[in-house]
Length: 172
Image (cartoon, rainbow, N blue to C red; front, top):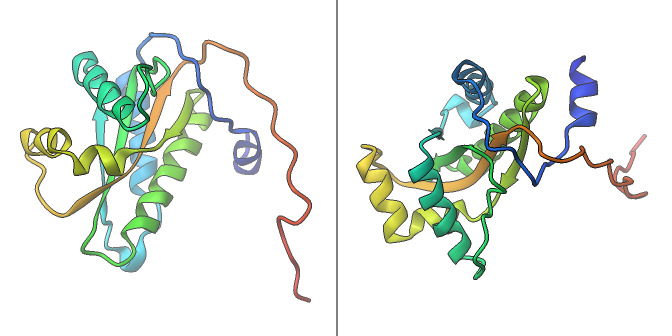
């Protein structure tokens, strides 16, 4: 699959098998994330790879608190790549978003399903989230940008929604 086809066919998957993604594939996906463009090449984001089921389930429960539901907001995906970015850099939010995009597209190119899950900001502003970062030795002014969940789909890939008519404008 060429790069353009990869971009046009990636879809968010919301139902996963519990099968673990091989570490070498996760590492390649993360590597793609580290090559996302960042403002002034500050490389303000960091990526935390979570494959430990206990920590994954703890994050799932914490994330679910912010939507007030007793569900798994990670849809049973066995891998979570958490993207945080250094708030002291003026481009941190854009930088982290570009990392998320690279992770999602690299996963698809690797035959791995993915989805961007929100509420990382709220998670890592909570005391439990800050404690998790401290326990990992992560210090600094980081804000949660998103969770890129990874795994093998336990459903058919959804069709693309039609693109809206006024998506792009030309000035010629």
